[in-house]
Length: 101
Image (cartoon, rainbow, N blue to C red; front, side):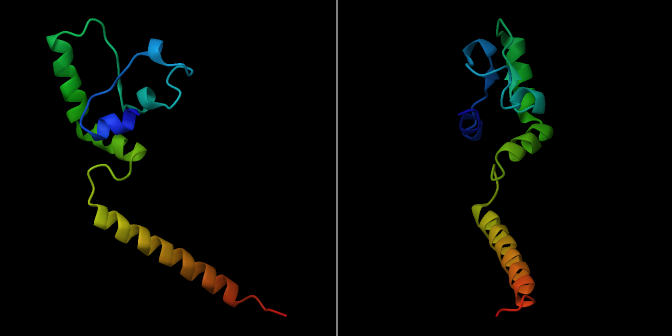
């Protein structure tokens, strides 16, 4: 759910008390995808949240978890098609050397 919220432009703050899984199970905190909840949330906290989610580094991390984040779907599909064709060519070339009985 966190990546869906982030994709929609909503900041996510991690509060371990709400998580039924072990601490940072998905590695979102460690990777820098989400921020830990700081209490209390004050005006200065909001400035920090804006800086965190507005950084170029954060966009790189988000693309690690969601490759298509803010990318042109046509370009992604073209890249996907190129890679599939390359794999098929590789398999075809490998199997063409195998003798059939």
